[in-house]
Image 1: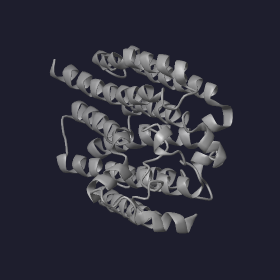
Image 2: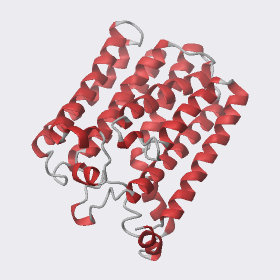
Image 3: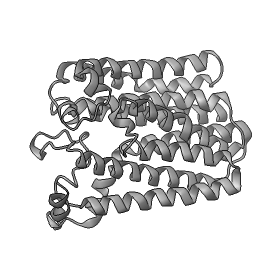
Length: 318
């Protein structure tokens, strides 16, 4: 297995290296890192009328590079565990890894080295921000780094034991959101915690819907995430539950006056969420026919985040 992957690295090199690496980092799945950072930084700016732009850029760079490392490390260990083995003909483009290893575009060694470099860059940024802003930054950074590395790396392998989805809710909700808020404000508050949970739960649904087409590959590779454990029909229920809780929390924080009324602009993504559920319920057994639902979920996440940011800014301006 290892020899085959390593020697396959020269295959497909007619493609440009930037294009290959862009495919490797799976940029279309990176918004769950920088959108909560933007949102909670905006909340801090509105609440305290001060903004450290340099620190904001460092946070954005850190969470983005960190996500690159997570995506590549996940690819490496899934490939080594014989997960993500579907060929191009039957592969859902939004699931099953980037494909650069199975297509022979990069080697395991190249991906692993690139992932380590990404985590090292993230660590340097984190230590600098901790020096400038305070030790709690290290706590957020450690939780994020630990849960990302051990999402697929032995012996913990959260993603293989049914805890990966919960870790992603925490990591891509309160950890990034509260961490970004703290960098700007120097304090922790209920508002960014609750609002970031909305995005964390949408990340849950994105992860679940991406696991459904990989059900057979994941079970074969003993990657026993929630869908692999309980089945694709249960995955549909878990997907809907994540969406329901996300919008329910958003409504609750507005009713409780924790968030401003215009935060309800986040509900503008709801029709697309309903549409994704309809497509998923009809085609959850067909990895190719459910592809539109995977894309819709990415759009739901991005639009909800952008509408939330817009709502906060409009509330402040008006």
